[in-house]
Length: 146
Image (cartoon, rainbow, N blue to C red):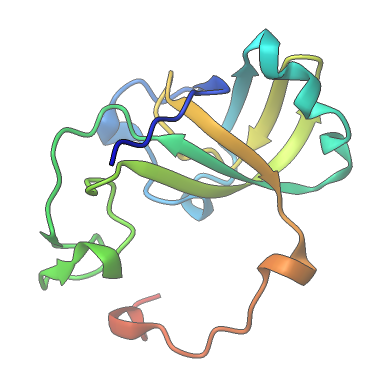
């Protein structure tokens, strides 16, 4: 089965090399980026400016291949890829919650950007605490690491 997505736009960020990209949005609170939305999708930005945060799904275009076992940044032990947030995944899809600063006719300005410049954006969804927040009570191998 083939699955095809069409990007709705792309990121403009200060991160032009993979080694400079913060590992999570929490490590990049002051980093600003812009999603330039393609004209044919710009109408979909209507009413987004009323939200403080958004979920952004994007294609990790610079990742080549994947590893099913990885050493995450907070651990020295090999872990299964699906128990980590590592980028080299079978389907290179990134997901971040970012602070929404401004919406224009064709762009979205964000803070807490942890994405490589020119990364294709697949979708933007508003973060809604009543729907998205959960009281997690288990943190697996990350327990006590942060």
